[in-house]
Image (cartoon, rainbow, N blue to C red; front, side, top):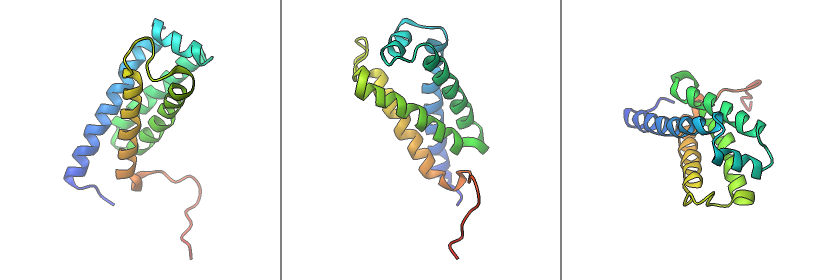
Length: 135
């Protein structure tokens, strides 16, 4: 299934948005910014969770910007951001350190945009193992 020109444009706009959101958080994670450390201490995953999620987000962002790996990038983005959303809803709360819910909203944007990309590019999802034809 090929994307129409409009679908391709929409997909690329979403891919760039997700990649930019993921990439802008890396500075804070990799430099050990106070808010980042606070978040990962709260969920009892500091420092390995902060660095590990940053690495996964970096890989997802790069994959989203490479035409042959967009679907894999979207899958990684959904996986990592699902963890962020889970911790916002269970341990962190919607508002973290008086951010007005910005981090939570960005996480939702990444989730919805990545899910939309994946839906649009579902034919590009790599298959692991044999395909069953149903015959």
